[in-house]
Length: 287
Image 1: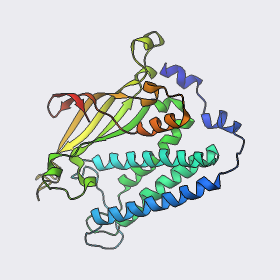
Image 2: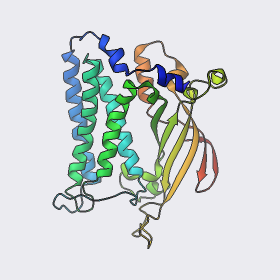
Image 3: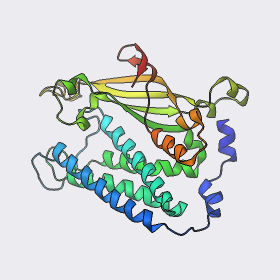
Image 4: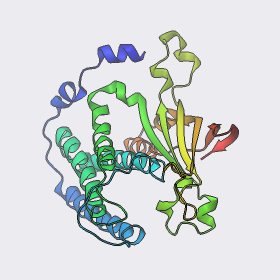
């Protein structure tokens, strides 16, 4: 049960990870990892430069973009992006035999480095600016995966992502995929077995989770993106769906396959879903 996990769990970093032996770092792996991270960072920078940073520049400034025209789905994107960067870079550091503690620190640092350079660039563009909401989401995303390692009950709650090209994107409203917020859905997933009584565990597959989804429609279509009251004109969409834990579903024996499935677990794969707001729609499979 979840309550029992809370009582039994100590910070795993202090219990398990102190037993690690300080293995020799595999520089033949770490060096390419560092070069690869740098190359990915450069590629992301150039992509953002084309997609976002073609606007008028100005001096460094802040702005409050809470409840913006994107209806805050971009904030969830910052949170999710931070989590993904931390998870992936952690695996790469561990593959290089960097110690558990340093891998946790460096993975969060790497994630924040990726994200914060974008914030600094935004701060010099008139249309954007330094957003403390974005920064907060970046920090939360960068540290949450490592908090999950330290306090195991947090592993029951995760954030996933799914995407399908929206009609607005197909119609040419957005010139870059990353701007197609209509096609994004973010999913807060819950490990159901973690909250069930022990007697009920056998009735619910341990690989089947519940997910609560959030998406948007009709944002940034046309020149008028706010109403007379200053609220965004788009629609918020809310979903509930099944979700899969791929590691528990396939129970892989090989370590490399386990690592692959753990990585793929950042994605919400097609599953039965119900959109319950702004209107009810049932989907046999929703992605």
